[in-house]
Amino acid sequence: MSGSGTPGAARNRLLIRALILVAGLAIALPFLSGSGCLGLLVPPACGCASMPTAYNGGPSPTPWPVSADQAAEVGRQFTGTQMVATAWSPEAAALYELRAVQSYAFVDGVTGRMLEVFLLDRMPTSDPVTVAAEDARAAASAYLERAGASTAGMSSSVRRADRSSVAYFDVVWKDAGGSPGPEVLVNPTTGAVFGFADVDFAHKHGLGLPVVGQAVATLLAQGSSYAAGNPAMSTDFEVMAGLAGEPAFAWTVVFNDGVLNVDAVTGEVAILKWSALR
Image 1 (cartoon, rainbow, N blue to C red):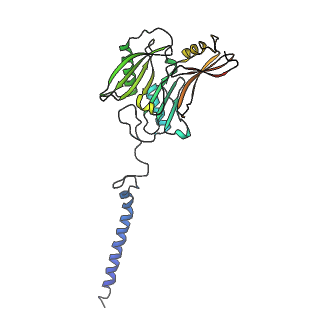
Image 2: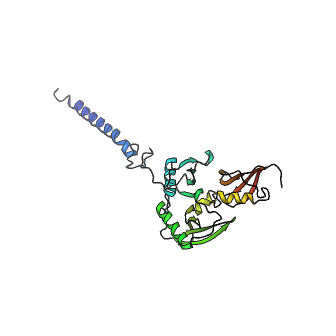
Image 3: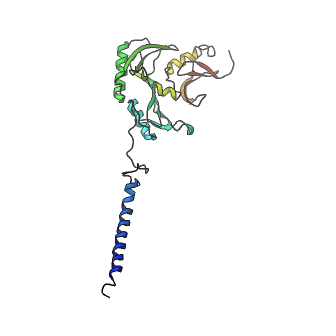
């Protein structure tokens, strides 16, 4: 009878060992599967990985949906001022529009890439050109350096451009294969940078870079056959949706007889409303 309890004791020991093994697996399983955010075997899906660094002009952006705050930080790097970022539209959540008092910018909502920047209060007027081309190149290079945008391995070219009675310096970088990189626009009178574009990517979003400022827009509207030299009452900048829903930029110039629209990219003048056609 003394040996009759041995099989039961053995079963109890086996049962205890099995329970210990199951408990150990229950503790370890979250870490092995990644649900504990360590991701030892399976990539974590809990979203607790480190937040991405917003792309600031380097050659290889990291794909990642960025937040409005991240987009605003990219804007601050390129303008030196705090900007407010909002989605361009509910249908275009992958594009952020950034605004400050006189500064506008657009950031790709997927990569955080700065697409373009323009500063209304630094745009050229009809004043004479007093800045040398090489000085404009130096100003453009310094601007990119302050923004943290790398041009390593790229070569730059500078040219004087004229559009709708506006002169400016256009400084463009290309890589060894000839692909376009950053473009920086410089005021030829003051030497100040007033525009930046990541050329290839900005065009893919349908973005054009404005060069027509308030003073020039007013002169263009006044010189049209509609206004016939009459004084303008006001000239205000607007960002609106273009034909394909892309951002479009224009100046609305108000006269006693009506309102004219001046395209800030091309300088083209069009009627919004007019009491009597001339």
